[in-house]
Length: 238
Image (cartoon, rainbow, N blue to C red):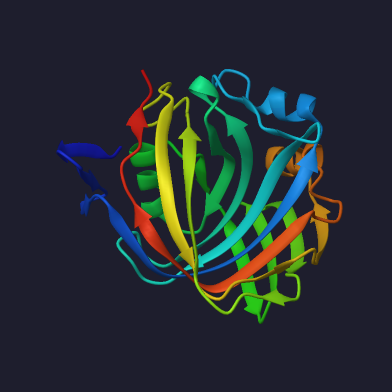
């Protein structure tokens, strides 16, 4: 288990991690979906969070990311997130699944940021604005998807700062609701309605994706060949 050894400094698997950490080179494809509020509320049970609603629908996100070499190594990541309201009604992103291909980032993600990372086998490829991924949990098939981003090309960097919420029942900060922020810059992103194909296996993550409407055409898609940003500590709420 990771250990906080000094203010804003962790030791994980013998690696010293000083916060904030800088993401210098990541490629990302993502899609935004709408879902029934009842399905999202069920996934948020016990977190103290509630769904953010847009025209009466909850909002979910699918994220496919390849990280170039940085403090947590080079690895692939597949994320399912929900837009939620936290304490005082504050909007933020809560991640419910975040499988990764690296042991260091799995343990660091769980202990430092309370993120639901688990180890997967994965084949993730990018061909221009199209991303394809196949995910296995051990020998169990989880999902296969191909996502093609929309056609609108933004010729300048897009900066965002989205609040984050996390809460795990295990790890160094088990049972604690954490609040953070993820300031990111998407360099020349491509976005629009886009398309997606999804094949799901028999697995809890696949069940969650089905419940969140991730087999239907997304509301929005995006792709960027370069994502950068800083990831700082998440603070306990209350």
